[in-house]
Length: 165
Image (cartoon, rainbow, N blue to C red; front, side, top):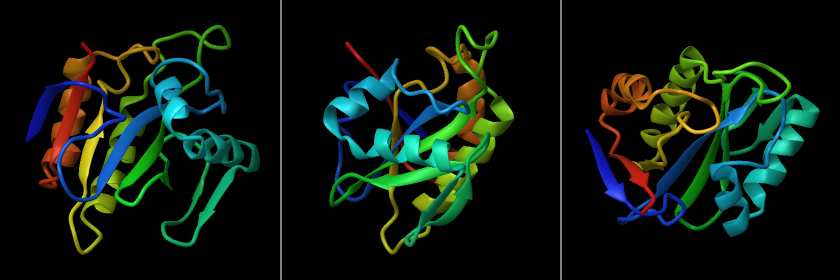
């Protein structure tokens, strides 16, 4: 089930541990869209993403390792009960490549990993997001929503989608 809210995805509601998910590109660029709100609140997601893109690999004692590329996620803990998931599901960005940039197959792979992460601890984590992949990545929410339903909703992960006022 997906719950739609008006608010800021960097201020997730509810009790318990939370995952904030968003879409990143596969070129290592960070500087427009929802990432600006993340960087304003926490420095770690941007720093870790840039290091991951530069090194080509993410090593983390809590979550294993992942190569940098489409379909991969990086979980970055930013608080006692909040983790930001950088999801590489966008191929390039303007003006380097032509859009739309979202890659739905990569998004599906990312969200399957997020569902596994959400259900892998003693206390289930809820997932919070803006309308991922529909801004700079050029996706259509109707298509993204189907991917969210096939992955997070199918895994019974409480999912919250935020629209700013």
